Image (cartoon, rainbow, N blue to C red):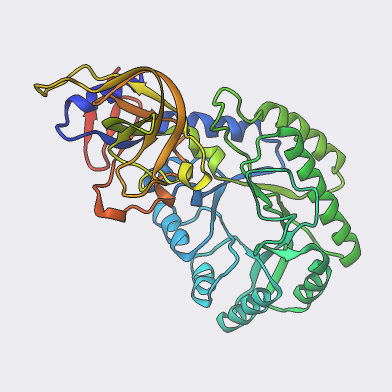
Length: 408
C-alpha cells in the first residue's frame, strides 16, 4: 500500500519527491498493543525526544499514560496538546527557568540528576510555596545491557553515581519542599535483547528495595526508563515484546512485596515503525569503481544513519515516467551507496547495498524513520527545501492543513 501511495503522490508533484510519511493507523495499533499487554502495575510514557511532531503527540495522548520530556520547550509542546496529561521531566542540565516552568505546567514527576539540582529544585519550590514530587536518577555501576548507547554503567553526564545515592537520599529527606517518591534508572538506548532488558528491570527493583530498607524511603514509583531498540540492519528481527512481557511478569511476581508503579518511558520503540522517509533519486554515478545514488534529501532530513555511521533500511519504489529526451541513467544488479545532496562526504544514508535495479526518478523509501529522524537533523544546512510531512489516516492523507484522497 505504501508503494502505491508514494506513486500517487509523485504523480501530483512536478518537483523531485521528498517527504516524511507517518502511518497514524499503524502507530495507534502498535501502541494499543503495548498498553494492553503491559502488566497492571506498569505505565507506558512516550519520550517525545524521539519525535515531537504535534500530530503524533495528539494521536498518542489518548493512548499512552503520559509523556516524558527533557526541556521546557518539550513541556510546552505537550501542554499545547493536552493540558492535563501526566508529564515526567528529565535531563542533566535543568535551568531555573525550566524548573519554574515545570512547576507552572504541573509536571507530575521531576527526575533529579545531581545533588546541586536537588537543592535548586527545593530552593525554587520554597519560593513558589509548593512541594515538588521527585525521583532520583541513578547512574548504576553495573548490570546495564550492551545497547547502542549507554547513559549509565559507564562514566557519563547522566544521573547520580550509584555510590553517592545514599547521601543524596539523606539530603532529599531533609529538604522540606521536595518529596522523594522513588528512583529513575534510564540507562541505555536501542537495546534489542528482551532477556537482558527484563534482567535490567529486576536489578532496578533490587537496588530500590535496598535503599528503601536502608533509608526508609516511601517509594511509589520505579522508573526503569526506555531503551528498547529497533534493529535497523535486519528489520525482520525486532525486539521480542511478547518474550519481554513474559519475563517482566516473572520479575514483578518476584517483587510482589512492593506496590510500586513501574514506569517505562519509551521513545524510539513507540514511533520508529510508523514513519517513512521518501527521497527521489536525482543522479547515479560511478566514482573509483563505486556506484553512488544521489537523492533529493539526505542527512539534513534523516541524520541517524550518518550519526551512527550505519545504513538505514530502504526499498525502491519504481517510477516509470521519464519526461526527458535523453537516456535515463540506471544500474542493474549493482552495489550502491546512497548519498544526499549536501556538500560533504558524510552525507550518506546507506552504504554498499546490493540492489536489483534503480534509476534516476525512482524513489527510495526508508522505513523505521519515525524516531530520531527529522527531529534531530540539521534542517537548514545549505538551505535546501524541507521535506513534506504527510500523515496517513484511515481513508485520507493529511498534509497538515489539507487532505488528499487516499490510495486504497
